[in-house]
Structures are given as C-alpha cells and as structure tokens.
Length: 514
Image 1 (tube, rainbow, N blue to C red):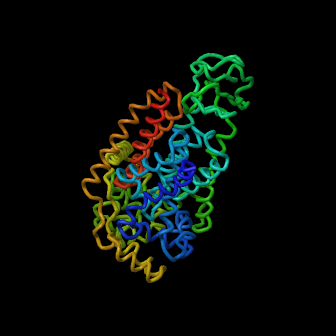
Image 2 (cartoon, rainbow, N blue to C red; image 1 turned 135 degrees about the horizontal axis):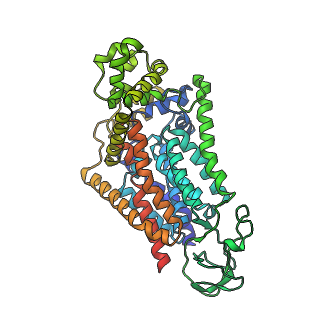
Image 3 (cartoon, rainbow, N blue to C red; image 1 turned 90 degrees about the horizontal axis):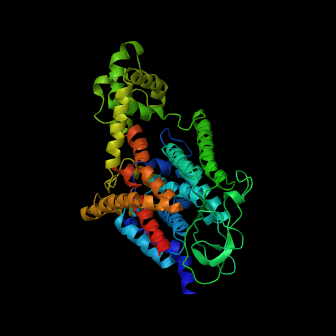
C-alpha cells in the first residue's frame, strides 16, 4: 500500500522539488519576453516577434490574478515527462527513487530555474524527450499517455519559432534510427509475467524456451516468421514465468519498422503546430506563414556577421532601402538593433515595415559573400555550443515586464512581484552552484558518449535516447546561435538532458546486465 501511495505521489512530489528557485526568489522568474507573453492573450493581439500560444497557455492559469499556477503547471508537466521516460527506459525504478533523482536534478542542474521562469524555454528539452518517447518507446505508453504526449508536443512546437527546425532535425535522426532496424517490440506479460528483454539472433520455434532465459517459455517470433512484415503488425511476444527472472527493458527484432501506431503520433504534432502558426498569422497579419516577419532576425544576423553591412554600404545608393539613412548610427550588437526603441530598425519604420525590404538585403549579402556568411554562421554555432553558463537573464526587467504586472494584476500580486529578489536586483546563481551545473552538464555529455556503443550493441531504446540527446546539442546551437545570436540561456536550457539521460540509461543497462 505504501508503495502504491508513493507511486501516485511521485509526480506531484517531484514537481514540488522543482519549484525551489521561485520560492527562494519570492516570485516566479521573469525575462524580457515575459511581458509580451503576458500581454498577448490579455490584449488579444499577435506580436511580430513571438507566437501567441505560450500566452494562451498562461492565460487560463493566471487569469489576471496570480502567475504562480503557471509555474506549478510547468513543474507538473516536467515531472510527468521525466516519469514517462523513467518508466520507458527503467521500468523498475520506484517512486521514491524517482523523487530522489529529480531532487538531485533540481539541486545540480539548470532545470528548476527553467521550470520557475515565465517563458517557454522549458518546452525545448521536454519536446526532445517527448519525441523520443513517441518514436522509440510508444509501446511503453498507454493510449491516453500517447495522445496527451502528442498534444503536449504540438503545444511546445507552436510556442517557439526555433522549435520547428529543431523538431525537424530530431525527427530525421529518430526516423533514421528506427528505419535502421532497431525497433522496440512490445511484450505483453500474462499470469504475473515480468517484462523482459530478449535478444533473438536466430529464429525461435514456437513452444521452446527463449534463449538465455530458460525459465521463460512462450512464443518468440522474428521477421521470417511474420509474412508481409512490411505492412503487418508484429505479433506480441507472450512470456509466462516458470521462476523468478530479473526484469529487463526492451525486446528488439530486425524487422521493417512500419508500425501504424508510431508514425501518426510523430507526424501530427509538427503538422498541427505548423497549421496553427500559419492560421494565426493569417488572421493577425494577413500572411499564411510560420513567421511572417522572421526575416528581420535573419537580417540582423547577416548585418552583424558582416556581409549584410557590406551590402548596405555597397547598394544603398541604388537600392534606397529604409535602413540606408542610418548606416553610420548602427548599435554595436544585433540585440540592440532588434530591441532598443531608438535603433535604426525602429527609426526606419519598425520591423513590419523593414521586413518588406529585408529579403532583398539578405539576398544581396548572400550573393556577394556566401562563404563568408557560412563561416560566420558556423562560428556562431561553435560559440553557442560552448556558452551555457547558468544565470543568464536573472536581472530585473522594469521596462519590459513591470508595466504589464502593474496594469493587469491586482495590488497584492504587484507587491509580491516588486518585493522579489529579481526585481530588487539580488537574484543570481551562486558561483559554486553555477560551477556544479557546468561540471554535471559536461559529465553528462561524456557519460552519454560512453554509454552509446554499449546501448547499441544491446539493441535497446536507450541508444536512441542517448544519441538524440547528444545530437540535439549541436543542432540547437546551430539554430539559435547560427540564426539568431549566441546567448548562454539558449544552450543552458538543454544541457540538463545529457546527465538525466545518462543516469537513467546507466541504471537500466546495469540492471539488464545483472
């Protein structure tokens, strides 16, 4: 009974452990973009720079009363996804062990700070885990869990513009691994049987004991026993225990990976998110596009990489672009160009107006200096992958966030917001804790790399999770650093994935070897 109670309380207990930064701060953590996300749904408008869906996610939770329910919901979502991963990769992990593990993550990684921030940054790593679950371990999820996870993935993709290319890259990797032939096959225990992992190097006849597990008898199949396996669902492997055998993790068969239940749940989230983004932008801006003014971000990157500025100086006498009168007054960084109120971008008419000329400037820059821009993009990506220090963005944001709190929330909420450490300028990650984060992150990367060969040899789902986590690090760096600008917060939000994946995989693989 106590064990059942612990299992039921595992997710809420783990979620509570992830809320400590907000409790220490005295209020949920905010960032410059938080003001936009608070105001979009309240004022019913779509900004040029941010999708509306995170704002729509927040509104029914705070309802202009208090924003605390938003981070509580984020903590529960994070704990739920982590619990699903543990159940899929290490089904023997108890509720108590899971809570303790999340406690360690909460103390040693940037994860709880993401949970406590009124930003969709948390959704990036959770999206990676969700896609891995749907691609590599769908048979470890109930039908309800699969549908809920697909719906959550749709929301997470729609909340950030960078999530679409990230999703495309992750799905390409996962699809390749599945098509390569390492596909998990479900095992349905009966009569008290345990889920075990069985390697099938050769055909096993019906009614014989499974190789390596003589205490289990049943029906084992391989591709040669499955006529038309390209289109037919593989029969389940039914095992009945004749004794006590340690629980294992996965069973893999070298079959064609056409699994009808797997692909719709992978294809629907990005397709629905894409349609939702385009539909909202059509209604709000008259453009059926994912990001109708997204070329402004690319314009800023090209200008500050060098080729764009060279194109402006060269072609302004002929092109007469709106930015031309301000060539001698550009700020030193792309962030200032994009966000300061007196930047050339705003003085030239604002992002929506300059967007009509951005493509021509970008084309002129790339045509004249394609290799230079490629080199600059690679340099930005390499810079981004090495910048993941904890604490980016914890400074106060009086001009970006405070006006919306003061305008739309009650006096009691305004007072709590103003009294928080962040608004008083005293919130920061203690240097020793930041060093712990960095050490744990790097150790997780090394551990994942060391575990991948063994996981592939054993043909387990852990291999897919480990490889996806490792590959998403440079992929995310290329998207955020190469197309935007390097910032610690972009890479820090996914750096807790390697230590988490490594610990769960190591525990499961060690148990499998025992």
